[in-house]
Image (cartoon, rainbow, N blue to C red; front, side):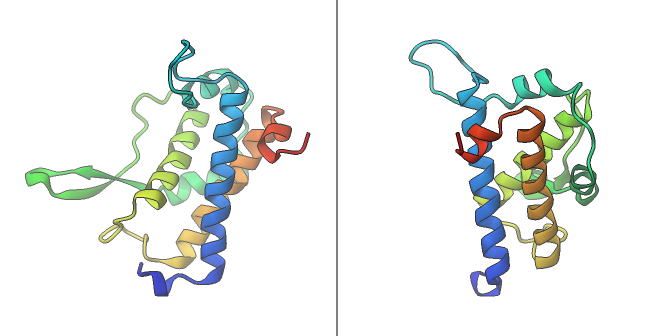
Length: 156
């Protein structure tokens, strides 16, 4: 999708998704969900620890179901170094929360890194709006489920 094809609504939704995704990663770090807790290590959020802690509490919502139904794809290296799009697999995921988090991270990575020519539905503004709305709503629901709304919204 070319810049001039992106309407104001889609621009606002993309910003909102990035904003709330980054707020959720802040909450992960604030709550001690770090990839490495050793002194001097980079403070990187650990989604895997979140999934391990909350997978039993997670309830599939309309938004998480929609996110799984829309199934954003990941870009991979194919034969002869050709870039291809593949479905996000369940390998390594033994629960639904793991899959939902994987899809949220896929949306974020696809938005941030660009290069979407050839991806089914990527240039479809309606589909993008659905993905962004569902993703943002799922982030809200995860913050509520974990009782992290103060860190997530920055209202203490």
